[in-house]
Amino acid sequence: MLVIFLIVFIDLVGFGIVIPLLPFYGEHFQADPFTVSMLMATYSLGQFIAAPLWGRLSDRMGRKPILLISLIGSVFSYSWMAYASSLWILFAARTVGGLMAGNISTAFAYIADITTPENRAKGMGLIGAAFGLGFIAGPAIGGILAGPDPLNADYTSPALAAAAFSLSAFVLAFFTMKESLSPEHREELKNKPKKGRVADFLETINKPGIGLLIALSFLATFVFAGMETTFAMWSRRQFGWGPEQNGYLFAFIGVVAAILQGGVVGRLANRFGEANLIVQGALALALGMLLIPFCTTVEALVVAMVIIAYGFSVINPSLNSLISLLTENTAQGTVMGAARSATTMARVVGPMWAGFIFAGLSKDWPYWTGSVVMVFVAVLAWRSMDRYAAAKKDALSKHK
Image (tube, rainbow, N blue to C red):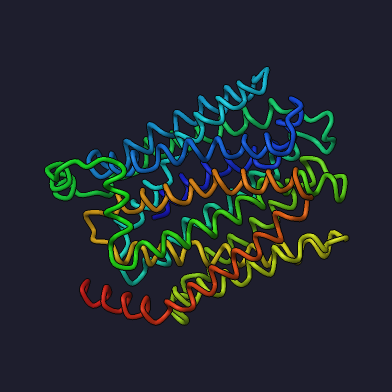
């Protein structure tokens, strides 16, 4: 488990490097707030297209070769981004990067392969911790390399640093990673009738209990992605911040997320159950989003962002854990790929919606509307808590 943790962490450092940079990079090419949100959405659109494909291929070819192919593709996309000379080139580079980033579904499937049902939530939380740690180092590195001035930022050095991190992850995976999917399971999956992507997705959401969990994942990611996309533009207008200040804040939130997902989520899931954590996380996200527009000091903003970090840190691995527990072993790659596909589509429409109302109404509206959506998620999850608790108990008994 340590190897996949390190691979995801190193790869996510590269991704985190460009997060505080991209809104300013887009505005460097005279992009308006909606176009900036489209730039963020383009990356996620690539993930949406690729995630089910990587999931199906990993079920047949194994997890390791898929991770290797996608990591080397990420090296190319970041290198291309470093030398973008126009807005369309920046869009193209981010699209390629998104196609390669569909490999995260393979990482989740890898964890499902090597964990027992009892420690599945802990394993998913560990991958979440890799995300969080990636967002500690990544944004800080990106912000420092880009500089504090939004008008004179260095866009080349952070992108090249991201390429170097993805290359390091490739080398680590090539030499140290062991295949997690047994030859027997691969052979079984190769002999299964091939289905189209739409058929796979429809079959997945029609599995008992899976459809609602994927819908909740979509809505939570929709809200979080909208915040993530517009925050740098919001902070520039509210506090006059550039890439460096945003990088430090995202790094701090990464520390909080890593602590929660790496050391707390597993214990909380054992004590309260995943369904309970989904309700808690949704309510925390609703509160944090509601508070952001009222933050006039950095201290208040940090409090709001910590609440958001808690919410997303508990809801995301809890949803993934329940989805995995309700899925048979031979379909983990396909189901996790479909779930990832839904959340990446949320990262397409979420930024688009947030950018649209940011530009059309005000900088605060993405956060107010996001709060309302998360209250709705909390109500849906609360009404289904008992059903999912019983489904989890039944799934665990079948694995004994």
